[in-house]
Amino acid sequence: MKAINQLLSTRNDIWLGTKRPYRMALPTGRDDLDQQLPDHGWPCGQIIELLPTPLGSGELSLLLPLLAHQTQQAKPVMLVSPPWIPCPQAMRQSGLCLEHMVIVNAQSHLFWATEQALKVGLCGAVILWLTTKDITATRMRRLQLACENGPAPLFVISSSHAHSQFIRSAVKIQVKPGPVFELLDPKDAPEPYSLGHSPDTSTFKFG
Image 1 (cartoon, rainbow, N blue to C red):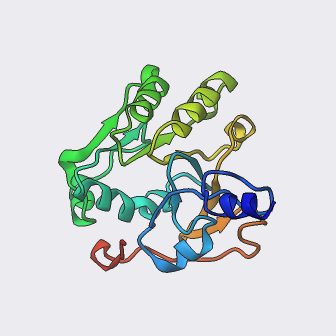
Image 2: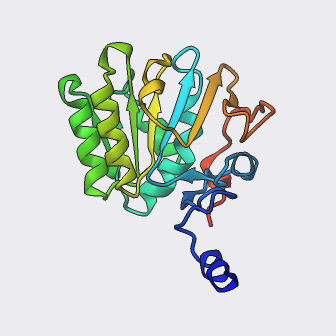
């Protein structure tokens, strides 16, 4: 029994029931947020829900450090169905290499494009904006499977909670004007916390 326990203690890919399974994670770019997240960063191959009230409360600013880092490493980032076209000058000023940023606006193909981007495994991050009319159980479950079989985190942004019943998200964050970011899972963060506006991307740290 002792030998089995020693063997299991060396495996990060086996859940023992008494502790959370290990997941690869990408730094958010700021230490205070990394310390609050269960994997100490954005978990790879997982869904992260951002729930802004209202839409445009600062949810994209939370992701700019990651997007800048990934595009600087020549890893494409895909923005699917954003409600507004991001300002190129602001994106470049935040450190993004625009040649590695892809925007998909075809409403009829947004789920297909997201699923394919996750399956191919070349993207550094995928961000999907959802409206209530887009959400079905089948679509969300296909995205869940595609995400879990790839290396990129999928950020699902919606002001509605309608999609939540169909997916298992690793992180769920409420975004309020300020911006104020609140982790909604009480097991991971019992106290809400405010990060304020993101500083210049050059001040963020990546390991």
